Amino acid sequence: MRVLGLVSSGRKDGNTNTLVDTILEGAKSKGHVTKKVFLADFKIHPIGDCATCREAGACVIDDDFDKVMNEALEADCIIFGTPVYWWGPSAQLKTFMDRWVCRATFDKNGSSMSKMLGKKYVLAVPHQNKQLSATRLLFAMMEDSLDFLQMVCLSKIQTVAEGRNEASNDQAALRHAFELGARMTEVESMKKPTGSVTFNFANPEQVAEVSTFKWSQPT
Image 1: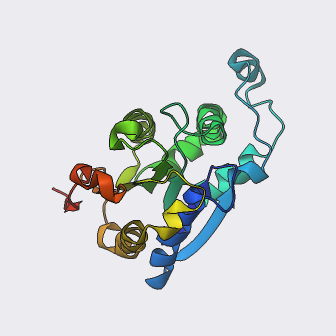
Image 2: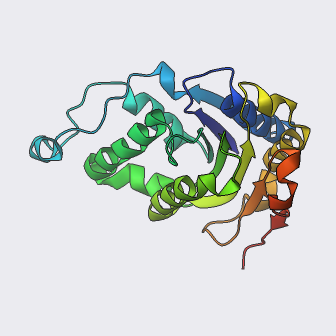
Image 3: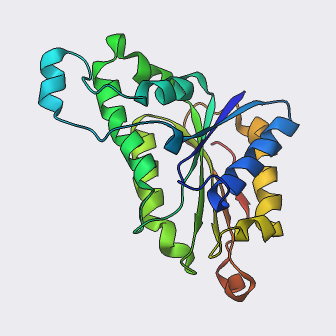
């Protein structure tokens, strides 16, 4: 399985990158082919006037979006890594997600939509807010969007990380993130979103809020 990690934080050595890296390490330990992309390395403009694109019959924005999108289309599983900003994803990830509308609409023969069908994904989200509910809107937005594309949610992982490198010192988060990547094979045969894995982590003082690890097999 080809696993792509999309790091949408503007900080390359931060908590988001740590989570994505650790998941990729777990996947690589089981023989999966892994690759990581920093969205901030690419020039991706916000979505523009859709009417203009409809008239042209193609997206008229000239930037690096297709370079990243083509990587996503080639992957079997995508790890979406983002910090929480105003209860939503980073601007880099939101802009990238918005541009999918253009690609899905104007791709010849609907190839990008068909290639997303059954593709797996993971959400990896560190956040400064000590409440685990801080991710509720971000998770809802991403899950609804990717469900529309008929992708499969393998897991969601979140950790409270107030400091710049706090996730690097969260051994519980790192252990479960690695396991998450290593267990991808167990659900590789899933073709529709019928099961998921959810890990939630917090600092020791929030231990009462930590959800138990649940593994839901496809029904």
